[in-house]
Length: 242
Image (cartoon, rainbow, N blue to C red; front, top):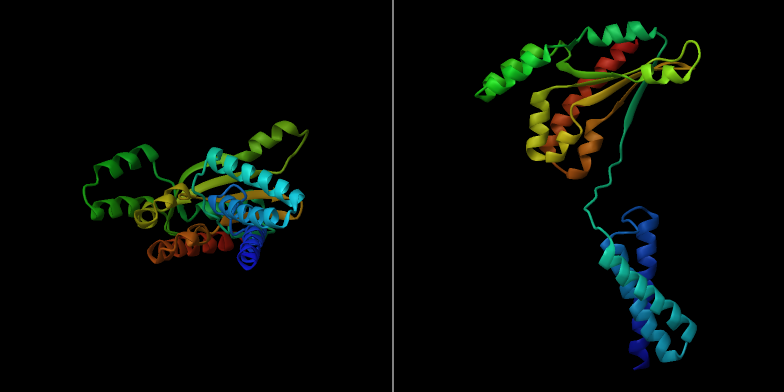
């Protein structure tokens, strides 16, 4: 009996420490079922061991631990989450802000979005869709969907000249289709953003790599399309910054 109780106690300690370790290295979160379940199991086993040996303070602590674990499991909204290790490319340029924007837009298509939308809806085959997109993108293989002048907002809080900041939302619908077909969440990331902003050490061009956003999903097809998109965008901002 004593051996069995000791084994249960040590298994409980391992479960508690393992849960803490997984949270510490960000392999799980404090509100996950895994973390709460391991804590609950560990507390139950340590409570059995403590009761057997008459260690009543430990019994009290683990009883409270069990109650907290049961409450957390019963009340926490356990929405599925995915951890994403985002990678950002940032290029610094000595060129003037306006010149960089002109160089960027020289290779990005700027179609009439109303006409483009109608053409997309009217396309009946993938070949038709590809023709519509090909007519809309620029030499970079990208088109502009919308832009946001963040600098306009910032200027309201400053007196005199203020740094400019422009967010360009660009992409290629065909590449987005290839990614979203196998990883539906890709539609949340595409089109992508190129941020052009003035700072004290010159103008920065920033872009979050699509491949890093889709890596956790483990789809070779989506990653291939994401890397193709990343290649286009990184080449674009590097050329504009030179």
